[in-house]
Image (tube, rainbow, N blue to C red):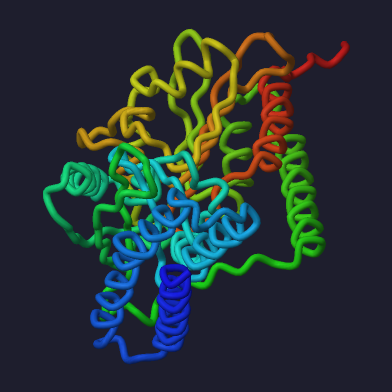
Length: 378
């Protein structure tokens, strides 16, 4: 079994080099380019040498132990996951097939969520077209590429994306290996994504939602009856800042009118306030169908229309997640208005639990909008 022994030695050497790459994470920022080149060389070695050798041994019957086959498969997957560099495997449409642990830490997106979704969805809107174009070119065999992109997780930190073609196993289509590295000027600014302990975090989030709903109930009961604008303004004031970066309230259903817009400091609030809500597809759909919408990293920049300056609202506001809910007191009941919430920047996306809490609050807001001043008995 000389070929088997040679393959084993090659694999052992490769593992030693990977261990050296792991220890290279502490090198100065200016030397990261050299480390990246070495890591890409090792990945190319796996794709061009080790994996074809493994397949050839299996076809020739020299690797007839199914248990050993599974062990090697697990080993290669482990090597991919434990690579010290952020790496993702995508197709020509940038859809993520695999993402390693370092990449989830850099992007702030769990691998299970990322798989099956376009990697462009985690980038700023301005970088998406260029990334798609370069990925398609690499998949067509036009050579490796690299470009600077910006992640929605940390839009102020440029990230160098290096793209190289890869043919996994005997698959007919070429995949693209993407290596993401912060540029050397920002290498020390990589965000650390560490969630709280599961039990403590769940309890904290639940307590925060209860506090928010208590504040909303107090504000609605304190708002003057019969004054819909005051009710929407009070509700928006509770949600702004502590729960959402942007709060946009539209009154009515058949004839929507924008009453309240609250946003971050120095944000184009006035442009969004003068926007016609009838030109916002999400708002119109919620008002007509009475269905809520939760979107994380929305793909369609036209989903909320354009502001008074002609720019896409979602792009200009750097929206990473949104909630658009109709204000109705009961299921399939009349719609009193539409409430839209945006989160932007590195803030965590809206969760399903938070969407459920907003749905409950929307019914309370609708009841407050329908409340009228009762005449006093004579």
